[in-house]
Length: 231
Image 1: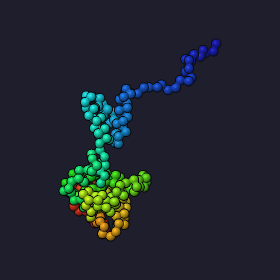
Image 2: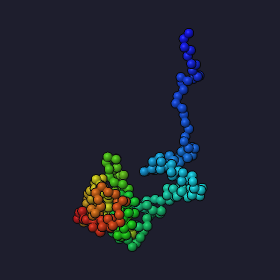
Image 3: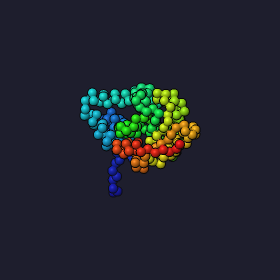
Image 4: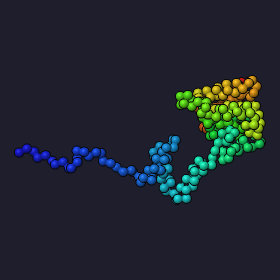
């Protein structure tokens, strides 16, 4: 008598992999996923942040939610320099004690903050909102270069209606930063000889570094030892 075959359970041949539900309740998973989308935040860090929110009371979570909404709803870019502002013009451009004839060009608002913390610079700024990077598809039209050129050409567009006499290039000392600086120099030189002096921060800043990571002493030396590029 042949060996009797074991009866297969119904639909065994078509059974797929066992499906498991989410490791956490759906609301917690969504919060973890939201935190994990933030730059520099991995899954483990996102879980820690989510459990921080869960551990604290509803008022703490509400404060966090309102702070995020306030940033999105109330913070704009200064219409003059593109710094972060809670009104049409930022506090630096509104400050009549600043030297409005002097404009320090930076890539991002965080670079502006790093330079302000040195306490060594009393002029104004212009934030490009990035740097030229053809490989990443970032071109001149994607930055605020045209707004800077307009400020130089028309004093009415500058803070206090003061003519700009010096542009200081405070871009990160990287390949892209140097390329952006060269492009800006060409654009400003095309306005005419002597229209505006162009300087750059001294190379006390290590090549390949980021302004936000430089200490205050290095940034202060860079501001004081800036070098003329043209004119």
